[in-house]
Image 1 (spheres, helix red, strand yellow):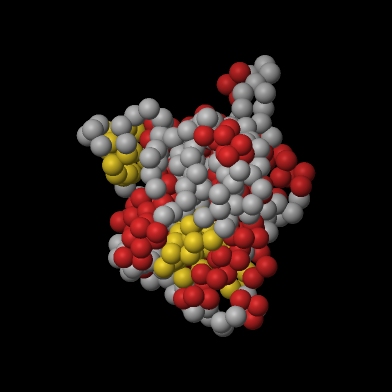
Image 2: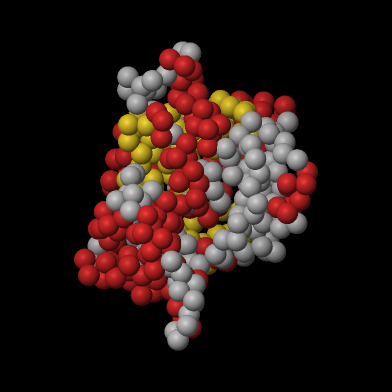
Length: 341
């Protein structure tokens, strides 16, 4: 099918953390009939961690950020993302108001999913935002040296032994509406985002892998632009794809989108100083992706390298060009021919 002839509107689901899912859903806007974000809920960072204690709930931070990113009410968007400076109440330093709002709504309604839905409605969110699970559980990992770490903050901490496997301290099922969205989507996009604490974390919840296996449409993985300290030090593109295929099982992942752009060395230096190194595949890696039964879609996804942002308790990474990512995802759907035309 000619790329220019692809004018079918499709249902798109993005799975992962707030930043990656947001970028994907922005990129598919020109050809999406509906857009749904299924967001990780195991973060234990400072603001989110405190809100979790207040609301006795899963992590609200990435959900709040996604809702704010797609809010039609810009005052509400800024309000949701507003962080208190701690003046007079040091415990609130850095707390995002939206996290407190979701905590309060959870306490009032007794329903975390309803709290997220109310927040999205207040903000006039232009996409569907769903938690991957409504279970208040903890992400844990086993390291290559055999030790275990508990809580997302420790799982992603730099300087430890490499990660070997993830698990939930309290096994939990995924949110049923999220599973329904995955099964009925024309395109499900996994990533980009923190491989272990966002992407693979979402796949730990019962039912997610099975829903992806029964998805009627294309299942695509967007490989990260760089390595990430504490999670993917020393990884290549193929290592990322192998981890996804191992989690999903054979025959589930259709396409892997991999960047081949090579930005200017000066633009990369601030990232490298923080331990984030550009990922670009060689021919052997591309062949290895094909050997996994996955179609590699290697495209130039990086345009202008933006200055690093100061993120709360997290590292920034190199973002893909929205237009290039959208074109590649549209091509991924066409290659599989799995639209509902």
